[in-house]
Amino acid sequence: MDLDELDARLLLLLTDEPRLGVLECSRRLGVARGTVQARLDRLERRSVLTGFPPAIDLAAMGYGLTAFAVLEIAQGKRGEVASLLMAIDEVCEVHATTGQGDLLVRMVARDNDDLQRVIDRVVDVEWVRRTSTAIALSTPVPLRVRPLLERVLRQP
Image (cartoon, rainbow, N blue to C red; front, top):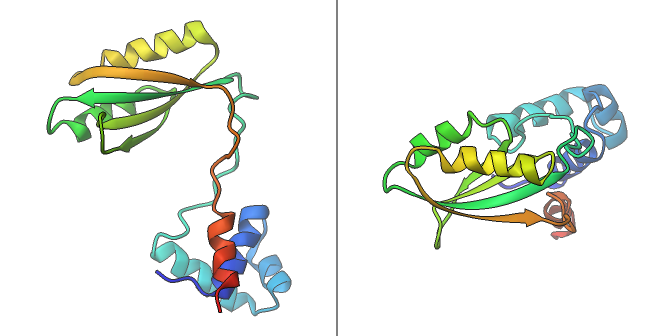
């Protein structure tokens, strides 16, 4: 789906202030409330806008360690392994990948001992054949969408 300038401005506004209501968005964007609601509905229908989750600082919750594991799994078992990984609370994301591994897993832990426990649970998942884990030292570029939305505003 191609975004137009109003879509981009609306998404930027909600990226910066996700708690804004439709009426306040319409006021700030200078368009009718119905226009904002229609845009939000369309963006949700087309799965561009997938929700309004709060930003959670996992370190503040006690999960100060983030690690990534590349998993090699048995052929044809991606769905089954992903379902089993979802049962591990500390597994935050799983991506199917190309290259040497089959799945990239982002997980969190309280400390190194806790990470070992989490890794042991991941390794014990049926059909996981091999893992390689790296601890994230910092996040110099967090998840972001702003540059992509701003590109829409720069287009002629």
